[in-house]
Amino acid sequence: MTHLVETLSVGLFSEILALDQLLRSRISKGLPKGMELSHFSVLNHLANLGTERSPAQLAKSFNLTRGAMTNTLAKLEWAGYVHIRPDWDDARRKQVVISPAGRAARDHAFAQIGPIMTKAIGSAGVEKLKNVLPVLRELRANLAKEV
Image 1 (cartoon, one colour):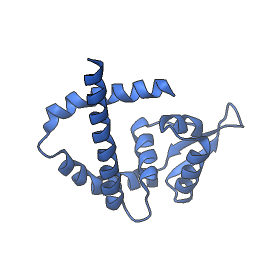
Image 2: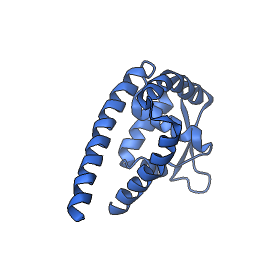
Image 3: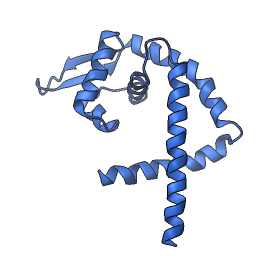
Image 4: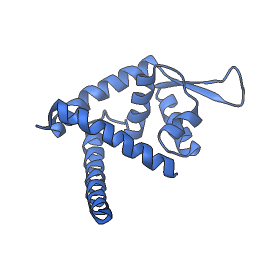
């Protein structure tokens, strides 16, 4: 049984890695000029949260170093897509929120990449997606525990 699980696991993760490469490539090509996939990911995350987050919280959410997240946030702030302010409770920390321009940029990007994603889903359908999402989330959670 262990051999079967290992074989299936390798096959599954090989497919996920290949899918990741294809998806990143296709989405990057569909994003508005100047927007990187990392920018879209952070804007989308903030838009879905609807609340402020610290750079450290965002770094943890994306499994990035604080330095990498700070770099991405600096670019987003320069573009006017996020507002970064001091944390009122602890001046050593900062809080990040998506700006109206950031929400508009995210919505524009989403409109451009939506058809790419829909095409990628193909004939899989809604029910298969509903079934696979919990499995993928569980795999991600299991891997996150290992770190």
